[in-house]
Amino acid sequence: MPVNSGRDVDVLVIGGGQAGLAAGFYLNRLRRDEASGRSGPAPTFAILDANAEPGGAWQHYWNSLELFSPAAYSSLPGYQMPAWQGEGNPSADHVANYLRTYESRYDLPVHRPVRVEAVRMGEGGGYIVDTDHGRWTSRVVINATGSWNTPDIPRLPGSDGFTGQQLHTAGYRGPESYAGRNVVVVGGGNSGAQIAADLVPTAHVTWVTRTPPRYLPDDVDGRALFDIATRRVKALAAGEPGTGGVASLGDIVAVPAVRKARDAGLLDARPMFARLLPGGVQEEDGGKLDADVIIWCTGFRPDLQHLQPLGLTLRNGVPATDAQLPAQSVDSPGLFFLGYGDWCGPASATLIGVGATARDSVAAAAGMPVR
Image (cartoon, rainbow, N blue to C red; front, side, top):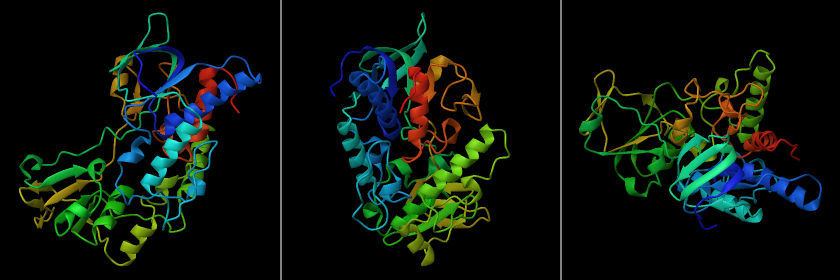
């Protein structure tokens, strides 16, 4: 949808990736219910997306990345992801194409590319949203900006003196340009394991983790992770003892490529190094490893800079949310967070998990039940 100069809507969704589209699905359902006479007036809404093209962050991932789950267990509400015909689980490209189709299928009002610069309270209530394409106003903001644009790269001694190439997960596209090079992959999560496995056939890979890698049981996939996370969050909300959750099982989903490299003995992780050297890294015991490239698979932070004018209360480093409706801000009841992780809804950072929180958030935002 072409960018316009700004509008006034009831609900403004910031972010057009999987979380924003899930919210758009339920807002669109209210609109259709109104048109068919099944409900009263539906809220007007729009979705603002900083990307030039649909597909969310999935369009930026490396080629060999694959989901944790089969397509049948990786769908947004309303429309099943098409079956994956390749080996293993669906690729990032398959997901990006699915999101493009999803957006078009429901004719969602996505405006792009629009970068939100600041969100502040309006004098008479509601929100003023300033963007690089003009000002929007709304009664409710559903913030679904994800974290792709805020990679977390640690600063270690010697970082400025390293003469090789440094990049984050967000900048990795595939193994082709690293053939024959000494590559240090840092990070004991899924990205670190998948990128290390991607590189071992062609590069000289050293995989470095702060603690020994913990693989989940080979039969655990995204559907099981969603069920585990949901049970934990529900128990905590009910005041019951929390289960260990996903973290109690392990950190790495053994997708086929990772399992193959692991079982071949090619993913033998070393402890985290102490500092960077001009041509490599120095280990805690004083040993040195040559490195032409360091890939930091060290995670992301929620992309929330545009919300700073609201002065939100932070809890454990993220905006505080309501105990009963974890997507709703405690400071600003018209502000919802969607898609960042369990702190704003069980498994809400996943395709299969974001739908339930999106439905509850839209229902609260609209003040009416959502089917």
